Every structure is written in structure tokens, then in C-alpha cells.
Amino acid sequence: MQVAFGRSMLFGNGLSALMTLMAISAGLVVVFVIGPLLVGGERPGHGWAPWLAYFGALGAGFMLLEVALLQRFVLLLGHPVYSLTVTLFSLLLGTGLGSLISRRIEPSRVRNVTVVAIFGVAAVALAAAAGLARLIDVGIAWALPARIVFAVAIIAPVGILLGMPLPGGMRLVAADRADIIPWGWGMNGAFSVLGATLAVFIAMNWGFSITLCAAAAVYAVAAVTLRTR
Image (cartoon, rainbow, N blue to C red):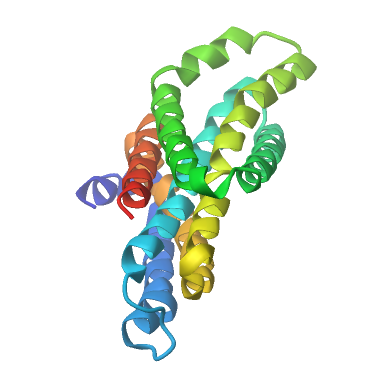
């Protein structure tokens, strides 16, 4: 927080607005998700905390990674609108394929494959933090259609890995803890909102490489949580 306030002259009221949005989002999550979990009469049975931490980590980690990728590919594609369109298309295409693959995995292998996929996402995020800028430099002088194809070829495989953890986790809880499913969806959505604002906050203060490292750390937490369930 000291870093953020120390840069208030650089970012003006924008950073203050972002911090206010983060506080409001966190407050709403506490009131409408965490609060009912702690005191509500219809909360899931014993053992819900690790599962909801898993789904929350997936939501936050996904947004940390997505925001960082959106910004990185602005340089390659030459305009924020192109980056938004191509990056989201590639991620949605990849996550759809990943979800389809996850549904076809044998029940006995769902946990192990999902854990491997999550660690794969963490590894990709770390690799992107270390070398994505140099990879983008390779194609930055190409014609726009070639750069778009290049971006899709980079992002879509990452999307396949990103599309596997959520349906994999849902399949696991559906087997014997169906009471957790609606709470898992809610936690995932709530932490997606928090993750988006947190990604911008981290990037403004420490850069997009650190944002990617933060995404890797959050996904690693999700993998360990699922592995120990």
C-alpha cells in the first residue's frame, strides 16, 4: 500500500479509484459470500473451506493472467482493441476446448490430470513473465494478419490448460459434495472480480511480469489445495 500511495502523484485519482473499487469488491464478497458461509443456515457441510479456496484461486488466477496477457499483446498487435479481441477470442477458444477435454477424462484420472493442468498454467505464467516480451519482439515487425495468427497460436494452447481446472474441480465435488457446487461457482465469480482489480493494481505498481508471477503463485496454491483434498 505504501508503494501505491507513494505514486499518487504519478497516477492521480486513477489509483485512488482503483483502490476504492478493490475495497468495495472485497466488502461485497465478505457480505454476500464469506458472511453467509460463516453464519448462514444453508451453507455447505464440513470441509467446504479448501474446496472454496480452490475455486476462488482459479477465479483470481485466471484474471491475473488474462489482464497481463491483454497488456502484453497490445505491443504485438498495435492497438488495445486488437489485443482485447484477439486475446479474448484465443482464451475463449482455448478454454472451451480445455473444458471439452476435461469432460472426456475418465473419473479415476480427473484429479491427477487437473492438478497437472494447473501446474502447467503456473509454469506457463512464469515462462511468460521471463520470456514473453522477447517472444513478442520476434513477430512485432510482421504484417497484422501474421501477428494475429501468431498471437492466437501462443494464447490458445494456454487457454486449453486454463479451461481444465474449473470443470475438473466441479466433477470432483459433484461426485460426493454436490452441496458445494453453487458456492464454488459463486466463489469463482467473486474472486474473478477481485482478481481483475488486483491485477491492475499489481501491474501499476510492479509491472506485468510480477502480475504473471502472482498468477503463477495463485495457481500453484490451487494445485496444492486440490492435490491434498
